[in-house]
Length: 181
Figure (cartoon, rainbow, N blue to C red):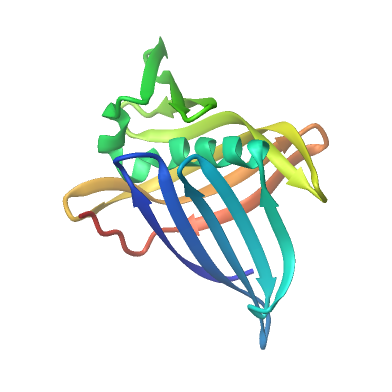
């Protein structure tokens, strides 16, 4: 479904707010808000901005949001030097990033192309389905790098869940604008 979204992220500590408007069908919109602040996550989905159709929070959602923050570091690469992120080299084109914030720890593996840009991120992340959370493999593939305010960041990509039943391609994105303060 076509959508537009805006996200604001802070770099002093892991936090973001993402707001999206999804066009489900002509005349029908779904609004989503994904918030991670002070170590607490809260996801909310409303049909037509009024009827709540999804709401998730709790320890597993906190872990999932911290994994998301770690993966999205590609859009604010200076965050890789943050004191709450540690790195382990795996080989010449792979490194594991570990993040610890509050009482939640998360990690994921970044895959790099020969020129140094990340092209893939894989982690174990909690997936919520009808009130039940399961730990699943979550993957972000990044492509086409563009410069925004002298920062080279991925401008296209895809997010997938690699489930036991097969891959679930959940989200395709294109970054059209990025601002850094």
